[in-house]
Length: 268
Image 1 (cartoon, rainbow, N blue to C red):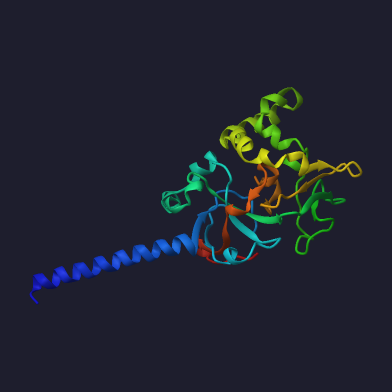
Image 2 (image 1 turned 120 degrees about the horizontal axis):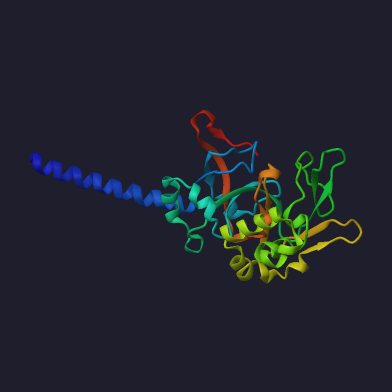
């Protein structure tokens, strides 16, 4: 074999190796692992802004997430604010996203309600306005020390409708609350999302105020989950935007791969 023939041979072999790497890399990316960058502090102290996570996708393909699991899922709407925070690497990786989630971003929250569960927030005496979560009438194991803010749908059963049609409620709310509603309505194109997806659940059947306690109760639809962030005052979660379809679940965050000084397995 001449030198020229050897060079051509080596180039062909390297070309094959590159093709194999791309093929297997794509398969692994589609079916085994995912990555995401966390832009907000909704899961402090478990996960902090700037963390880049390695997401394992196999487990939830063979079993459903359990109450208390930290779960990564596709936001059920286009979040323009979050899209602006994505880095070039994230934008490239999301090119492999399923067609129905093109333009969507990943959220990471804790699963607090499974299909059929009834949720409510109970005041914690002497806590300064914090609440404990009760699921089907009791505090779930592992949630004993978790504190939540009564906001969004837990504050009023009409909240999601208010997000969808803020102008209808302008005279009934404060100016700052109205501005909040308008901002997220536009950022999430929430009216369309409400009309095309959330409204089909006939919300009054799933969200109501208990006449005895005065607390809002939420029943999770059979094809949905309910997620909330650990850092409740700073978390934009299902309290604000509604139920998340089961099909939107991606997987479980396994490793923190960035920053390097905090590299390691994520604690639950």
